[in-house]
Image 1 (tube, helix red, strand yellow):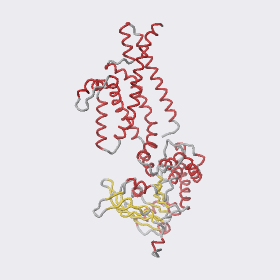
Image 2 (cartoon, chains in turn purple, red):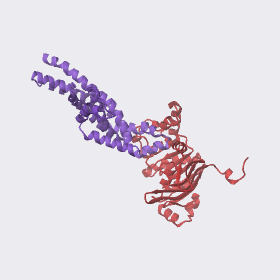
Image 3 (tube, helix red, strand yellow):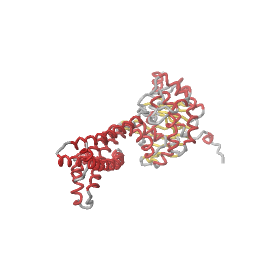
Image 4 (cartoon, chains in turn red, yellow):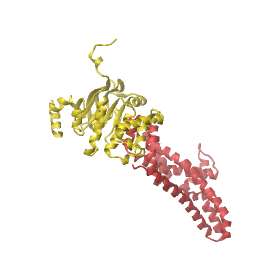
Length: 217
Length: 263
């Protein structure tokens, strides 16, 4: 029992890093994903094509590779080359990657709304922004809650990839103790921590789904 | 100086459509439709499926773009065609403003499913006209009373019958205080026993002298409520006239064949 308290300190510190990456990525990638989705469904052919290419690139290569590229290779790229410290590099990679996945979820949600909703908004005099903000997106939220919940839970666990930049997230902290003390106990504790985080998310999304269940369609 | 010419005493021209042409791919859907609707007219647009009636209606409020022709609403030009044949529309802000004078009721209602009945009605007045909630709610409730649905204010559209949905859609369109109303087969998606309540609401509107252009398969409505019946077939207006003349003595063989078939 004493041992459990002893290892709790570094594991909690690791959880803070994990949660930081999680929340910052979520807050940045959701709006970016929405913007990408709106461009993707727009009539601007060139911009829409560029976004398609971006999504292909981001979903088509490993997140770990993207993170390594931004940390190690970006400084050597002409013009946009910039040397980022480990934490910002991880945030940039996670945000760019998750925005691509969210963009696809939002796009499918937006395109699943019946054309009659746009027509009704148009004949009532609403412009594009009003139609999106008041009519389309509120309906999209209900339809994408399940896939967004999936993606968000995956993000909690993907944060463990930041170990490649030598950052001490929950899993790396646990592994450090395992290698030092020759016991698998820290892994069990880390698993419990991850489960608690995903449980909170599951519960939160469940609440949202119930809130949106008041209407059908 | 008051003019003594005939057109000075005629009611205001609400819709002026001249030589409207529209094609989808290889298909000529509208082959030069011209129609005038004046204030207080209730025009029933009838004809077989695929005759282009709905497309024509949708061209009038910019849900479809015309390929050539001229559309003016209450004297304001929305689209016009140059001598060289190129069709020009007014700016999108102007088109939106011109179209906002027309209310529209759809075959499939197109109510907003995430909003209650009352919210469906006050949404556009609040976001488009920037009215305050307490300004528009009494009016919305009056409209709901008019279509006999005040007790459904807090229901969601999915909790209503088709006839109730369509009556809410009518109230929603009226809340924007349009000068004329377009109806695109408003009863075609309804069970037969529910069409009566919608037609009653429309008849009530006609009695209040609302200008209406109604694409419909309801021949009783065309005969009893409209002031003019227009028969379209294969993208053209074949014949138009008073309901009495059209139903008792159609001039054209195609009109006769259609009426024989549906009556």
